[in-house]
Length: 124
Image 1 (cartoon, rainbow, N blue to C red):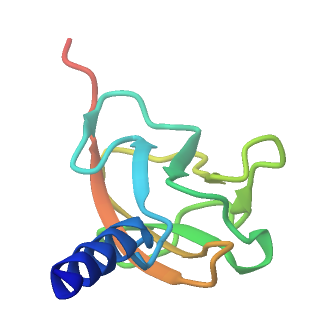
Image 2 (tube, rainbow, N blue to C red):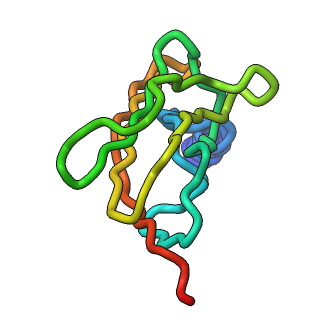
Image 3 (cartoon, helix red, strand yellow):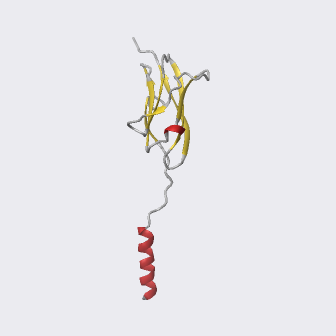
């Protein structure tokens, strides 16, 4: 009887202790979206993450098919929305582009990844 009561108590304690889940800044959405095909080039690539980013350690860049960096090299975390990272993309022409990013979330985890999008001319 005492053993079963102790076992029940131990089960309750384990159930009440929160599990340790590592948190990372996950890309929630972006503009343009991954694999998007757009007819109007974006003025900025914007990426929203699942948590606040450390501005001093956040970077983003946009690369063309030839492997040249084509953004304005002005990536920044938005002061009003610390989960938003963006970079200017002036004068993008038709083609495929790769967005590369590296972020450090406030919990200390580094996330580095990339995705692509395509700019096509508008159909006439």
